[in-house]
Amino acid sequence: MNVNEEQELVRLLGKLEAGFVPFEVFLELMRLVTSSTVELVVFKLGSENNPEVLLVPRDPEYPHPYWKDSVHIPGAVLRPGDADDGTLGVSFERLIHGELQGLVVSSPKRVMTQYRKSERGSECSQVYMATTQEQPKEGGFYSVDALPENIIHEHKEPIRKAAELFAQSQY
Image (cartoon, rainbow, N blue to C red; front, side, top):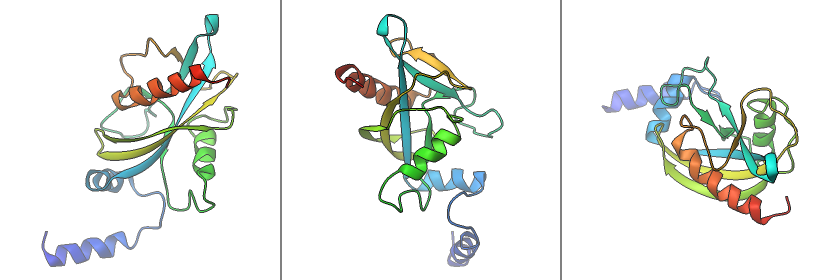
C-alpha cells in the first residue's frame, strides 16, 4: 500500500461511526488487529444434576465464512462505549437481548481471559458463566461431556474451565 492509498483508507475509515461496522470491513479489521470479546457460558443442571451448557447456532442470515452451521457459546465483540461505566453491563445486555433472546440468567461470574487465534483472527476474550432455569428460544443444552461435533473449536476450553468452576461452586 502506498502513501496515497493509506491516506484514502484513513479518510474512508473516518467516515464510519464508532460501534458497528459493515461486515466486510469488520472481517478485514479482524485479520489485522486483536479483537476484544465477551462470552457467556450458560449452565443448567440436567438429568441426575449433570451440568449442561447452552450452545446457540450461528445466525444463518449472517454471512459468516468461518463458522457456518456451527454452534457456539453466546458472545459479542466489544464495541466502543460498552465499558464506559467500568463494567461489561452493556455487552451483557446486548447478549441477553440479542443471542439469548431475553433468556433470564443469573448474575455473570468471571471465569477466565482467553487469548486465542481463531479462524477470524486474534481474539482476547473475557469469559463469564451464568445459570438459568429456562429453556432458550434458540439453541439447546448439551452435556459438557458430550459436546456436538459442530461446536466452534475455540469454545471448548472456556466451556471446560467454566464447567470446573461450576462443579466447585454452589452456583
